[in-house]
Length: 206
Image: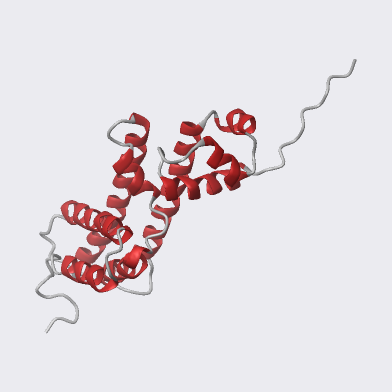
């Protein structure tokens, strides 16, 4: 007797992870039911369990995917060759003010997961901490580049400044999601830039 061949999957895991990520980002972990995931992905409950192991496992996969996407965007913004490092930091902060204002924060899965789950879920805490550390490192490298190019005071603590900008960015995400206006978020971004200790002999300084 010839054994029946297993039916091939008719979906891409990456598509399911992306679709589930939209649901988790909108509703949070606790506010997302398995039925919500079934509706969003078009998969049956058993298929979700067989492929991902359950709601929690799928959440971790979506969290990892969204964190990677967010980090790639920040890395691209802060490492472009067409402007100076300091100009890139300024552009990124002002871009955030525009993108996050008036409730238009969009996908904040990493930040929401940090607030909702990190204090009670070790796996989520590890994932969000890794994302935080990676984002901080991107800022740190950009700040060091700005120091090397004579824009930022060479004696400034690059690691502390990097942590500062990540903290400001995360705070902007939270209050932007609550509906804070573009003008107010822009004021936050501009004020944060004033914390940068500029080099006295920086290029273009009077």
